[in-house]
Image (tube, rainbow over all chains, first blue to last red; front, side):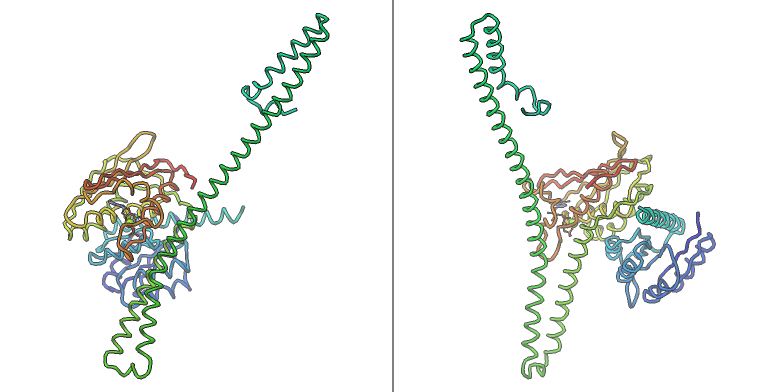
Length: 135
Length: 310
Ligand SMILES: Nc1ncnc2c1ncn2[C@@H]1O[C@H](COP(=O)(O)OP(=O)(O)OP(=O)(O)O)[C@@H](O)[C@H]1O
Ligand SMILES: [Mg+2]
């Protein structure tokens, strides 16, 4: 599969570090960041294909961050991270255009599969945009 | 002369009399009965003219009917748009009215030295909170509407539908179990992978599960089953033991803004969005229900991507 970049956004630093490490071990180009605002800023400067986004964060919460991201980068695919206590926001996330969600503590294989599917979708989307531009 | 190729055999019947009398005229002419031949000829010509008049009238009537049909379709369309707009207007007007009342109230508080009153800050905060929540509601409605209107073309990917549904089931299960609602799974194990738009399908599944849980309220079952069915398609069935749907509502539940939830609770867009998604995915969604016996929603989806036209 072509190289692609994944951004993980979560305020729980332990979780963030482990997941970045695990993904890297599986040859995924993963970057971690600990707030929605910082994630949005980073997206201005760097290119990412898939974002994994915690729904529960202080400051800008996951849903608000998701909306902003989709506004700025409509082709970006976002996977929501929900805890047992935040399923309601998971549902909301799906309605606001998240590609999928993963329940914490995320099973790494499940997550990896979803990341791949999300990336595949982004590639399909880009291809479609290119096609329509060519016509 | 009318263009014959555009006429069916029935439309030529009126000309039969003129053809016959014309034949008679020729026959009489050949047998030298000139006077009778002339009479027959006159008859042939008059019946021809009459027939022509008749067919023209029929044609005109047909055209008028076509025109009327078109007008009817147009007026049905307008009625649908009218219904939709009054739905939107109604949905937006309620929050607007509340916002209006709250601002009036805030003005009232701030009049004179009302701000000095001990409970003024709390009152103001309350009003503001209400205004914010009403604005959020308006936003939700417009967001859903835009989503509905936007012609999002599906992006087709292979999906394990059992897994897709199971993920969504887990998402609603926690809240459901607190209300003693049990999710019963019946997934066909070797279900073929389906070429579809996964996030769109997830939205539909969520809508159906949420509706089912709402209809049950407390204590009941939601059964989910998947199976392969004829014509290379899969069948996804969601049944619940909830309140059921009255007969007179069955053909309305897929309409935008149709809801039986109390004002301010549901948008009534869940099922209409789901319906349009399933059509886009080349499938169909149907409902069967009896009041008191719950409801069953069935989705048929093609295994291979086939683009449905909306
Ligand atoms: N499983 C069900 N059992 C009984 N009635 C149902 C069921 N699903 C839908 N309905 C009826 O169909 C109506 C429309 O459903 P729809 O999902 O479109 O909107 P809603 O659920 O009322 O609002 P929203 O989805 O925005 O919360 C519901 O209000 C309800 O009357
Ligand atoms: Mg609903």
